[in-house]
Length: 501
Ligand SMILES: Cc1cc2nc3c(=O)[nH]c(=O)nc-3n(C[C@H](O)[C@H](O)[C@H](O)COP(=O)(O)OP(=O)(O)OC[C@H]3O[C@@H](n4cnc5c(N)ncnc54)[C@H](O)[C@@H]3O)c2cc1C
Image (tube, rainbow, N blue to C red; front, top):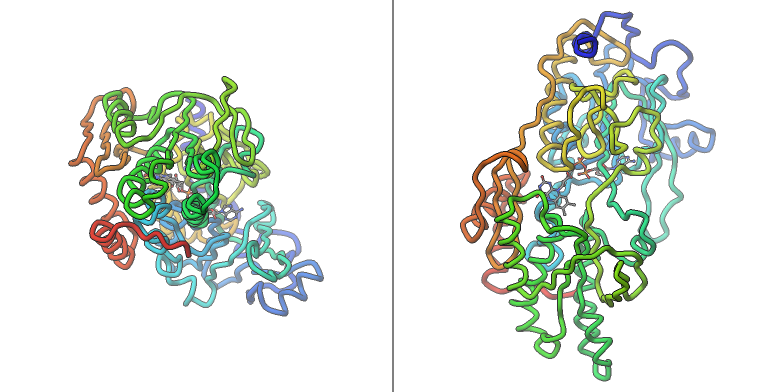
């Protein structure tokens, strides 16, 4: 009862001294405030040397600034719906595009091209490239100071030849939204980060495709031993969730259709093994799980129940002592809180995510919100932690954009400017169901709202058709929708592209 009334009162922002624009009492930490400049300019570099550079607090009469960390499902949806007539949007993220993750596995074997699943942020929210106070900053947030309303950032230069030294800068916010996602779980197993490839970003998919094609070509070289050829062509997937299963299905399709035709010398050596500690697709209906198991076995995927204990350069060791040599190892065992999220000075939800209330606010910090995989309801809300899913992240992004637009229109857009506004209904998540492909034009569609509830579940070709149609309509832009449709058609007509670029 006490909790309910506390939350209800929190849901109204009280009129407690609008400090006006800026970071509140005390001197501004910025040398250059009011007129933000690019942190990549020479002036900014000089200022970096002296200690500070970045975007200072917004001034009276200027639009309030929403700083969004991340260009994933949650952040992109939020930025798409933010009202830029009242807000400037500053996005800080190590990548300048959103990844349409449900179709990422298809890019690893060339069913789809990489560009088909990547949507540049500037197309999702054009303000970041054409509004004077809105920016996309290719950087990572490293720390937050909730009292000063600032974040610390570091530019991302990794992977570039002759890369510049990363520069550091600060950004002041009126509203700050954490949408920085989660990290692949490795459970502390030795060797995973060094020898396995994750499947979370476009560059992971590119690495997988290059390695797969390289191994195919190396295995064709005269004089190679039988044992080495088998190892090179053994693709091992660890993790039997939807991503691991979909990737295994794509790989087996690639082998059946393309490798057998175009690498006929080695066609009998290539194999896929899927290792899962429990059951594959544990969140799906039992009947669908059985269907997926049968389908994968029919496609030649070897299913192994076991726990990986150690990963070495060319082999992994299972808990029963079995050694599994591999040429390609893809790790897909779910996600957990990132080290950045763990380092933040906020109370955490169970599972170590940033704790939020029902309105997705971080209650211990004014003007701070968290959405998507990096956030979870605080224990005292009595709500369950939501699954790490695009449908959760996207809907939270949409909800928060409406909430922030509403607050801005009521005059509460600036920092520390608390006004009496009813935030409206709390965020409520309704699960719409799950889908997964298993290869060979077959998929699973599970429309139950939870594991325990009843509902429609389908498997087979019709489900595959539903899966494809649903994702085609969900792809963010018409441009990418067209790319995806054309890629599917060319794959159907001519097979997958096997050039190693
Ligand atoms: C291969 C694959 C397939 C999937 N398929 C499905 C599916 O079919 N259906 C479904 O519902 N879900 C699916 N998911 C899960 C879904 O993609 C995630 O739940 C969703 O991406 C979460 O969105 P998010 O915005 O919270 O995080 P993400 O999409 O992970 O985005 C996080 C963003 O934050 C950025 N970032 C990270 N650290 C920092 C930092 N320190 N500072 C600034 N920015 C930072 C990242 O670069 C990224 O831009 C899939 C996931 C994968 C990997």
